[in-house]
Length: 253
Ligand SMILES: Nc1ncnc2c1ncn2[C@@H]1O[C@H](COP(=O)(O)OP(=O)(O)OP(=O)(O)O)[C@@H](O)[C@H]1O
Image 1 (spheres, rainbow, N blue to C red):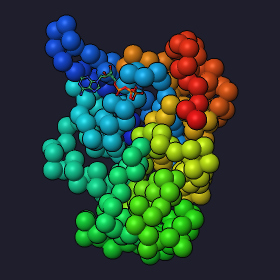
Image 2: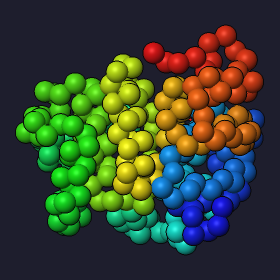
Image 3: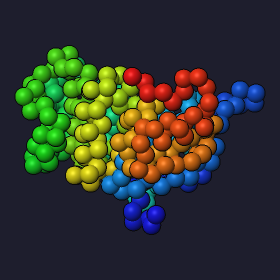
């Protein structure tokens, strides 16, 4: 991939926890490019380093060694204040637990990151995103008045309002039933296809991974293999090769 096509690049990324006999290399020299306007899923057995990699790529955590480039900025070496600002301005997040503010309406949650940054939303883009999540009639509702799937779609819209260079999603469907998961994944897929967004998603679920253009497989902190144009079946097969345990890799729901 030429560097102009790359949204985020990891080069020999290591993350080491603990010392001596309790030392764990959560990441052991991971190098990968994440293409612009592409939907990439990261999979692997429990404890393989998926969340650690996502957190390092997103500037939520710092590698022990190696480089993470967003454009030409090395997140691993950016001072804290600039890293916070970069996360706010250039990166969107979707978490498993939605993380909406309970006292704010859906619309207020969606525009919150821009409000905090003192920026005005681009009204056309905001309308496009709101239309795409299909919740125009519920924008005044508080999170507690929305289903889990609706809350996660609000969280996805919140991640996109600033038109970030990359949206990072950590198990975005982990708390959802299959119908709601499909709505959220359709939205993420659409944001890549129609709006040219870049999405990197950690998931346990082969069906969720099948919405991506490409799947990277981690085991023991190392990149083992990848699949392009995955199907749920091809992902499940690959997961079974990585970890032949009894239930590993089965769809969560
Ligand atoms: N703060 C920490 N301190 C010590 N070890 C940690 C810490 N965070 C993660 N680890 C270890 O690093 C390894 C990778 O963890 P990580 O959470 O990235 O895996 P994962 O693939 O996301 O797992 P899961 O699918 O279960 O969420 C594991 O062995 C974990 O125990």
